[in-house]
Image 1 (cartoon, rainbow, N blue to C red):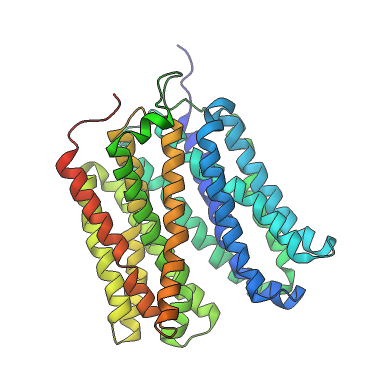
Image 2 (cartoon, rainbow, N blue to C red):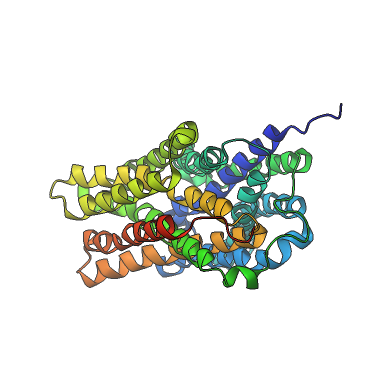
Length: 398
């Protein structure tokens, strides 16, 4: 009997892939004030760091629709880990080696952002291609590791700085770089299958002609937007609403948000066989809109914090759920479809925090006004799910 491939190794590599992405997305923001104090970089320039990160990731999402299938999943995903490790490593070294530290930081950010973009495009289809039962639950559990990674970065970095001092951030950066370095070996050794047989996956032009595809794109934009608007402003909202320090704000705001988001994905992963995905997502949309309204309108600061934290529970299923729906409804979408889904999610995650910030500025600096405006994203998500439920009866492109 031929030896059966051990797809649990693939799943472990993909789990650590999302942990790597969480490190890339969440570690640098913890150092913004350190960069300002150490290198004299202005806050205006520091604000460019997340923008460059997400723009580079968006570019990779778009480019991957063309090259991922041609180069192959294994080469691309191994490259994602190497680029992430090199980028994080250079962040610890380049600012002190170059005459302009900010340039060194941006070079490092671009490198690990490219790695992060490749992870986002490839990890979901790699798991979808594995012969697992209960794909919805497996996908939700997979995406929970981004939450655990984000929570681990926040808690681990806070503990390290408390014990050894923030001046030793370069050492911690190199330690975080070991995660993708180790995972490179995992992806070199684990079995990786094709999502769709060669020659049978749909071309981008075919996807663009499907109304279903655009409906799923809408779901992804709203999923990314619903998650990011609260996640990006959670720390500032907590600090301003409760009047606490930044450390407490980071732990109580983004920390609790990530914790509840991870719990949500784990719970759905465990009970998904007993739940209808579309109905569950509709319920989460209602809960998410309610959490935004509580955070924006509650007079008591503790209620606002509760709305912020429970929003993580509500948005947890949205992103992986939208991916699972796309795989069910459009089984021949292939890598191009997953790349466009990642692009749509990142687009929503880029636009919504900016919209919330702009609305807050227009309201005289009131973050509550910004969060109130962001309620539109879960509402539109619910409308899209209702249309999907009533109009789509069979898979497209079969």
